Length: 235
Image (cartoon, rainbow, N blue to C red; front, side, top):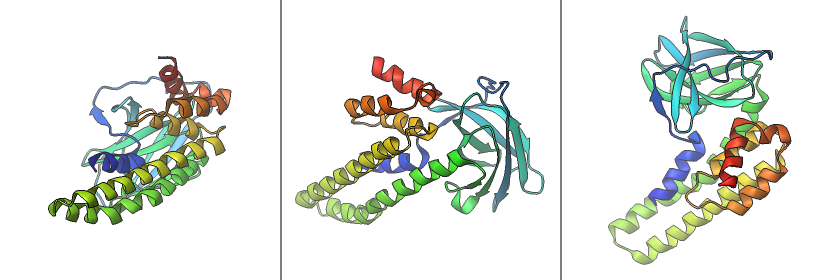
């Protein structure tokens, strides 16, 4: 059961991140047009917000913005769209979003910290589409969990096995949805991000990963997430 709950959480956050205070400007400068991220926080207090580079399972602060009247701004340039993380000096929350070279806005409500409202960014809209569909699949776990607890307390092995089988079906449904999403969005950088997350699964379907990678556009294949998948397949 623990395995499936971890998958459930991963579908919302995509990965867990460890904070690292060292700063890096890697892949932040370029001759391309840059990004402007305008932000607003609601229902929680923060004086400073940090923009963090995600490398493997750790985050590295690369910029900061002072909050003024609940608003903040980040400006910069990225070579290609990537997932970054926002963190806060008075809150342990981590908000993951895609930074692309455009002007867009994020509204972060402490009561719905993992569901920020992002406008003006096509890639974040596509990422949110994937996240919301994933949540709908894993809502079924919320229904099964109390039944699992009851069966465990009663030491009902037959019931536990049945629930375990139901969990596997949910996991399979999520995996199938993820690969179908990649197929339908092969020209989007989000497809590479989703495919990268598939190679972190406990049971990796290497053949499906390989076939999915083949259909990605060359631009997406050469994104940071795409290159990580390529490295995995070459091992």
